[in-house]
Amino acid sequence: MSTPKFPTLMVEVTGIQRSGTAAKSGKPYTMFQAFVHLPGIPYPQKVDFYAQNQSEVPQPGTYECDVIPDVRDGRLEFNCDPRQGRRKNIPPLSDAMKTA
View 1: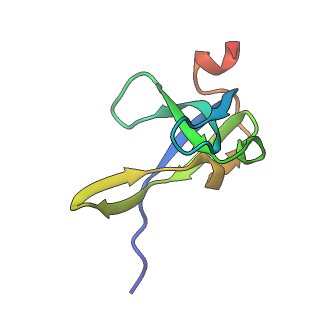
View 2: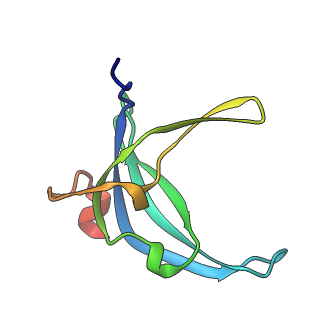
View 3: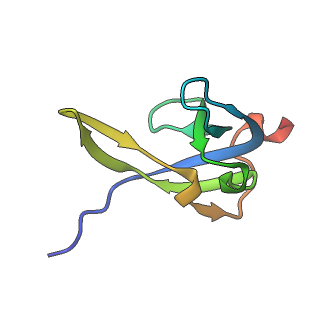
């Protein structure tokens, strides 16, 4: 029996990031900006991803990311993480990356 193959998403990491300290916990964080290409949606969608520190932020570029299903608190969730994605050596998919 083969393992089921979940779909992948193309995610374009822009290189734009921000860091700070969480007000409640006092722990440092980094958020980085990307555009995700969703099936059936004509334009890429702007999203932010979390990283514990700046060294975890992927280099700007296009990544093929696995969709990871999960159940949390009885709710079905689908996530992807560009930090675990496969870098693709292709031209930018969206105009957003051409100007970033």
